[in-house]
Length: 85
Picture 1: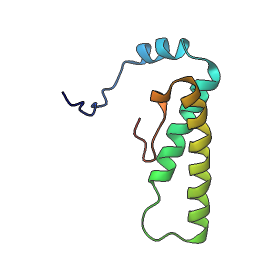
Picture 2: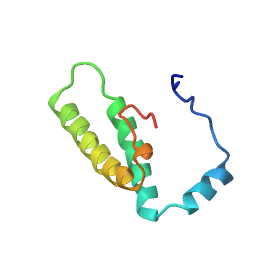
Picture 3: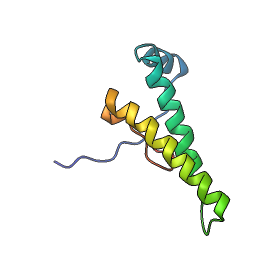
């Protein structure tokens, strides 16, 4: 049996609040930071100027910091660049 990729399904806001209430605040903050940083990394395309490269590296560093917190809590929560969970 092979595992297939899961298709992201939107969840109702009340369910998200219930899930979030079971997690520590620093993990929720890290999750929001990781999603923001992943989107930021994903918006840089093509040849980059010096400022864009610095911004991309800053976003990658923020993503790595947030993923470190998320992985310590649950490795399945880490976020990849581009915004995918």
